[in-house]
Image (cartoon, rainbow, N blue to C red; front, side, top):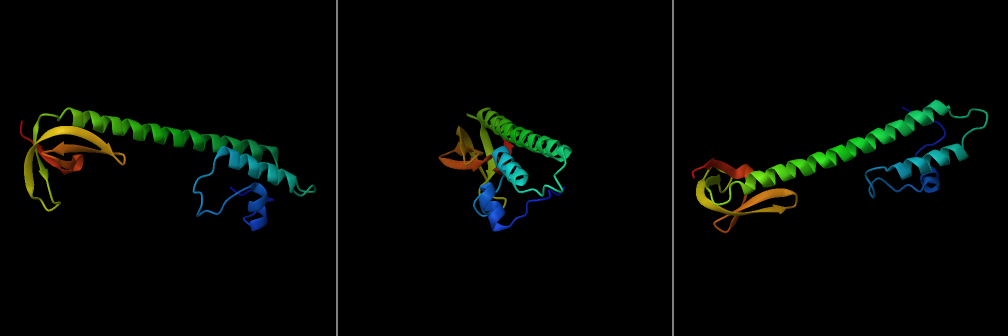
Length: 138
């Protein structure tokens, strides 16, 4: 979908208050509204932008924001599910791949932690990722 009247020239970015892509990777509704007002301010009076395009663009930005929120909520739900699964293993003896080469080690799960958005188990004083578990022995 193209929008007439605005291009990616440095002046257009400066007017719209935009930042280079290396600084920011997502656009918010505020960014969209700044761009929209800039487009209105500098549009060609002999060839104005169609109102239906604005409504369509507003609808699209709203949809994108909803999808982003849904993705965030889903990530939180999956984290909580993994945390719950790990909590169910506390006090149980597991076998896990200790080195990524198939060397199985056994130990008792002592606690569950979340580090950098990933659930890990404390097994005999060592952090074990849920993906390393190969079996449950008791």
